[in-house]
Image (cartoon, rainbow, N blue to C red; front, side, top):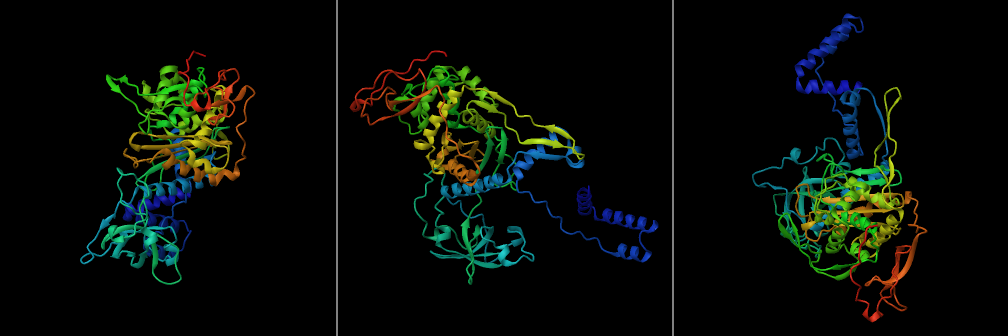
Length: 580
């Protein structure tokens, strides 16, 4: 209540100082009339000018999660209860994991943004006729010590004073600084249509900035003497989101909805609807495994044309090549588009859509074969919870973020009861886990293999590199990451899920893995491992160099042997499918 009164006083003063002064004088005169103050004290107080100390904001280290909770409480109970009745809300958040998630997402987006290239200065002034408006460009220094204001990693707007090939001299709030080659070598030319790959250091600063340019800089560690040291910097134009869930309970452990809450409170983890691309494919293949497909089933990867909405649709693979006979495992590991579409066609569109609903997809799905490639927009939380079903042996735990809510007297007015349902056969989940471990070990998700623990997951990349995803899981937790732009446009050429999103996932998981009890994916009793030829999906003969142990439901393993190793590139015809 006291905080509300203080905030009310601030609002009243800054909006109507005369009314605020009148109100103060009224209170003082009432106190005088009631004998609480002497006439002399009242006279001094009435003569005192109105002053208000700066109102400090309550620090919020977990803004996106806190705002998600706030919106829920307001929608559920109304503003009066939220702001006036002293509710206590107990959440599922792990604060240390949340902080790590925020740090990993910010650092990852900055790295992605730099790799794409330098977008150029933020503005320009004429050094001969203009003086920088530092109050507009940067936070005021006031009485903050220089070392504290220019703490390492802090970002500021700077004005370029001079430029040579190897040195940029800048000014920040009247203080001189320099940017040496190590601070600008990353800044190759920005062009989202080019490769977007780092092609070597920039070694000439004159190609980047000119005197009078307003640029962003980040403070480096200070030397004992000399000017301030900065690095050329830029606020990312990219956005992202991260969700981490305990799949054995459904509890949300961390949720970050964007790069900077102060700039944009829009929560991209739950409010944004984006195309998942190939991250949707595990749903199609899980549904297929329940329709008598096996990891070794063969589908022909060849050109195909469909009529969709009165027009011909000719889907292609990522590299616009076709690979012929392909096993289900290879199709998932290498994220083959044509094979996924053919699998969806075989199992039936309506069946696959119902399967997706069962696993937890709540967003609208387009009623056409393009859903195989993730054409229908979803949000990160729902897709992360779907992967949690695979990780949890086919059991879905509905995600939740509030454990209980108490009123000011301690009475529980809401308690979340976990909702658990088996939505997939356990052996299907195990087979998908086994296949998706292959995605990490040798497929599109190899970037996260460095975590060094049993991990399964899948990348997702949409047309024109507009959306990049990685969703993966290990013992107990499933984490999803999305990267893209708010105004849909390409991230940058070749900025795939494995390149733009997976490193963020890895950085986050490295920070929390020590608090997770690592367990392997344990085979089930009805799962058998049989050595097969990876090209044909048939039993491998002794000495076959293209052989490995594949997992099957007992009774579904192949009975025929592959051709000799020298001819192992040949494969049997497509696997026939019958309802299961």
